[in-house]
Length: 82
Image (cartoon, rainbow, N blue to C red):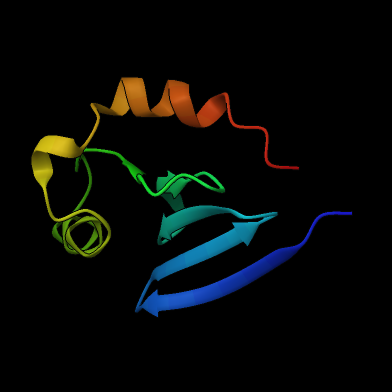
């Protein structure tokens, strides 16, 4: 059975913990995630609004560590959290 926990980080920025994997949502879009047991956060570059850019800065301030959207989407789509 899946364990799911929702945490609001800031206005329109939420973290959803699913069995230890944390998915970060800016508005309704998954923009980053962290796998259970891995200290690294996989974060997408900002291709959205200034507000989402602020959210991304809260999650991963180092823009050099962010992935291009196409690559991030591929990694995210391969997640198996449930």
